[in-house]
Amino acid sequence: MRQYERFVKGRMGQGHREDLYDLKDQRFLGQEAFVENVHRQLNEEAPFVYDISLGQIASEVSSALHLPTDLLYSLTRNRQGPWAGR
Image (tube, rainbow, N blue to C red):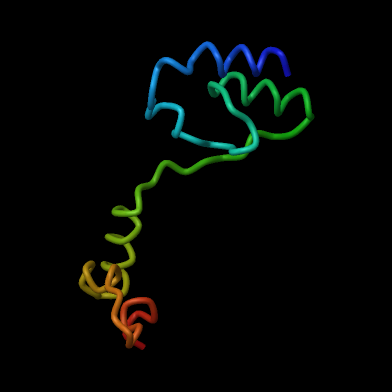
């Protein structure tokens, strides 16, 4: 707990840091090597994380279902996008 307190206090003056929001396993805060070490100590296999953007997923779904990509993002009441036009 003291180490965590030092960690937080030592970085308070840095302001917002985008790299602290690049999460892979939200149970642990630290660099990838630290997270892997914690998993090893707990005899857990580190989870596999896919590095795929929402845009890439939307593009693939759009192509597979022959729908315009903007329809997938639509907020229409008829739910045509989420139901893939069915």
